[in-house]
Length: 81
Image (cartoon, rainbow, N blue to C red; front, side, top):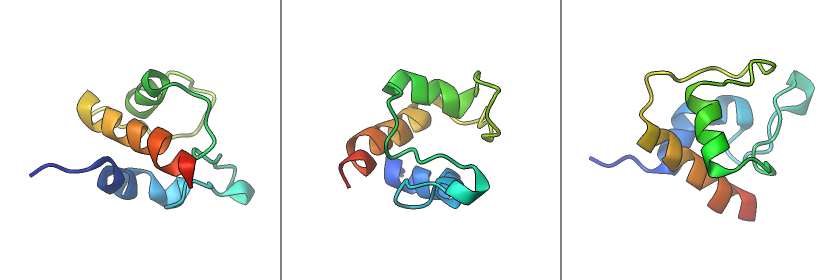
């Protein structure tokens, strides 16, 4: 069964970044809807969070393909809403 980027986003990201990608300003969670990060940068942030200045959870067990699905969903769908 193939899991879509939207489904993965809902499962792993929406609790903090909200379903629409607007984030939670008062809790310090930035919107990812307006990100200027590239798809590759988003994948890196999801899997490794090499920018350890953020408090974002790291999903080390997530496959690169799943992270790419999320990144593409953010870049192609959320950004257009």
